[in-house]
Length: 120
Length: 142
Image 1 (tube, rainbow over the protein chains, first blue to last red):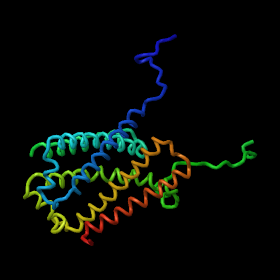
Image 2 (cartoon, helix red, strand yellow):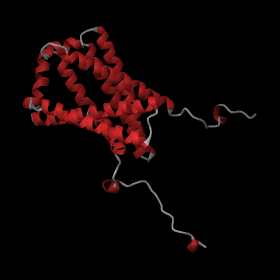
Image 3 (cartoon, each protein chain N blue to C red):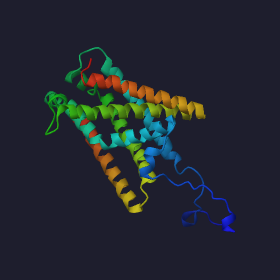
Image 4 (tube, helix red, strand yellow):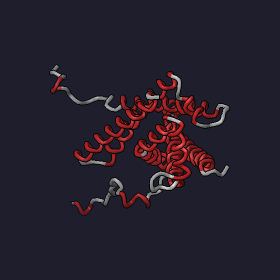
């Protein structure tokens, strides 16, 4: 049998997209559960105002959960936006530029959101 | 020889200018709106985090967060921010419900034509109904 590794590897087979597909599903479930948990806390008795709202995000465990959701959101949006660019933008250079923009946009937003939850 | 061959139909990718003349089934509408709502939320992400930042940082910033929707910010009036928020509410609801539909289809292999149709109609009905209810709340109708 001839060599089938390194630069000689025969590029066939599956799994090229299943990791992205799975990560998009897993992050979606995490964000959906977080949404439900947040809605329940907002609907708990008590007048909605700064103290109730900030109180929800005051505990360390809620900050950790929010952090997990921020990272999930960035990964999820990366897979989704990459799909959009791959479907509609054919010139390689433009597509690369848009993908770089997407990464910068998402990492920047995620960093800002993390700063908001942990500087309090 | 070529003249005797029957003209075969040619299908190409649709062009942007043809979109309006294509009638999509409900599942197709849910699918493209899933994309549109995702892209919308991606683009408005800094706005959302700006609101999140102001709403959490201090009581003073919370008041600024609240006043954006009543007296506006910069040259933009308050109703404009409410309208943007309504767009975000719709986007989140549609993306959420269409996403749950996807997970349900993945988990139970509910992928027949009829299931795709009925779940798409349910998705559109739920997301639009909830958007109307929350939009009415946002604009102070109740």
